[in-house]
Image (cartoon, rainbow, N blue to C red; front, top):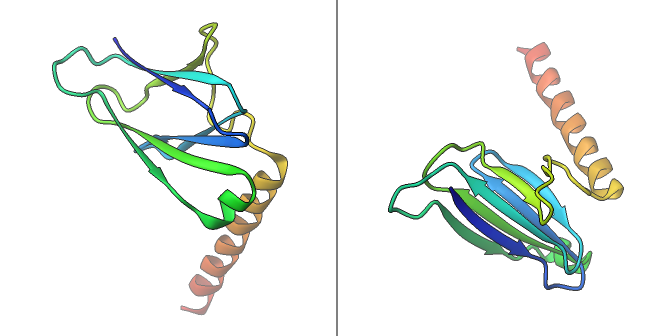
Length: 117
């Protein structure tokens, strides 16, 4: 089994994106999660990317993506006690509202295009 530990050393939120699935988990300062994969080969199981988003950074949010390079894309994310951490874990309510509003706007635009065709 391949395991990678992710610790939030920042003073704000760290959004852990599990890719290529696009799943998000939110770590509080000093919180640690582990990404576990069934992969047992010699190649790297994971790769990591970080990026800067000025809007997120001003809101105290950092972003990192853990890419599943080998093994099952449905890797597990667990806390230090081994409890499963699901997609959306600890997502701030204001972020959830903003994402839902954006999705609703996109749905309406898509429905408008289909109705006019």
